[in-house]
Amino acid sequence: EGQLVESGGSVVQPGRSLTISCKASGFKFGDFAINWVRQAPGKGLEWVGCFRSKAYGGTVHYGASVRGRFTISRDDSKGIAYLQMNSLKTEDTAVYFCGRKNQIDMWGQGTLVIVSS
Amino acid sequence: DVVLTQSPLSLPVTLGQPASISCKSSLSLVDDDGNTYLTWFHQRPGQSPRRLIYKVSIRDSGVPDRFSGSGSGTDFTLKVSRMEAEDVGVYYCMQATYWPRTFGQGTKLEI
Image (tube, rainbow over all chains, first blue to last red; front, side, top):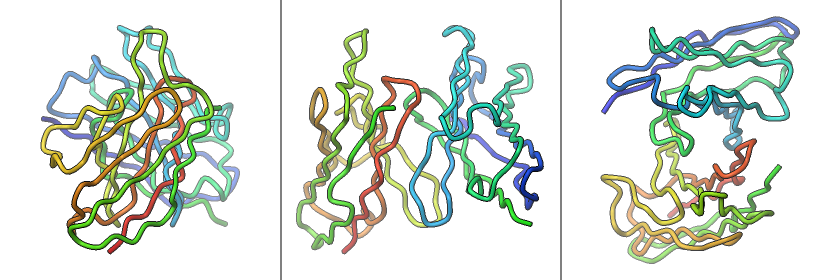
């Protein structure tokens, strides 16, 4: 069946950077797109971005609110995806989930990022 | 960006009674490949979302058959035929036809 495990969330000051990770196990990581989705406290789900598999060109797409500040990467040999977040703002405070496939059939448990001075 | 509008945003339901959630898209979600990539998720408090239905009406393995999805083009519906206690939580629709992907605002189902 497999699973995804996020890690690396922490408290960070506005304007600083943070990189969080998504570690996959139990399936062939390189065959699947990996999405990042976030959820601010008490709010709904917001799609952050996606790194498609090599079979679909390995293209990367971002939501408008993070484009130019966030970068998604992946290491298929290690089964890990990363979300590098630069120029963080207080409104980036959220639980960050990674999810498998375009229609997200599998989710991680999430990692909390708090942007605060 | 494609806007998904869910209604209602909150829905009190009696145990054993049906519930219905609407998700309306600002653009047709029919992809060039002929598929419609409209997905439904359920999220309980403090938990990660769980996918229930994909491509409008295909139920995931292990999802009770009291859940059903329907619709086409821009109008979609998730139905629960008989509400059970474990069905409380927030339900989201998401489209995976266009970039960027977008979610509906969420509908809170409560007893």
